[in-house]
Length: 158
Image (cartoon, rainbow, N blue to C red; front, side, top):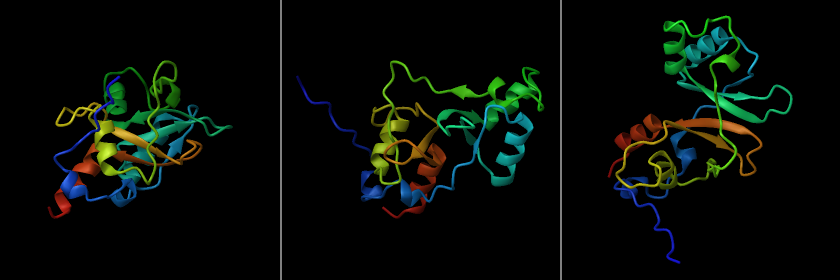
């Protein structure tokens, strides 16, 4: 059985051992499925966030996320209203049959890029964002986006 080839990025020389922590991601803002869509929009606007995580109100377990551009499209299309609960518009994480990729503050940026590209070097972005958790996936610490990674590469000298 051949070993799975490791992901190698054209940006490896720029990363130089940097981790997700070096992106300086802002603290996560997590809402509950029962919170109003208007709260998500206001909260995201105030913090300039594009993605918010949705957690269980009692267990704090990560249930899914809200993409603000998608949410705005749903409102504009009349599919949801600002007073509706987030559960009407949130994207739930698929837990069955999928391997969860743990992204922590110590995850190397090359691994983060591999996650975003679905493991295909130079491939298209398959994921828009990653939820940053602790090693045990008990706490949501932040969200890293493809834009965060691209900005890091632009700012860092080769």
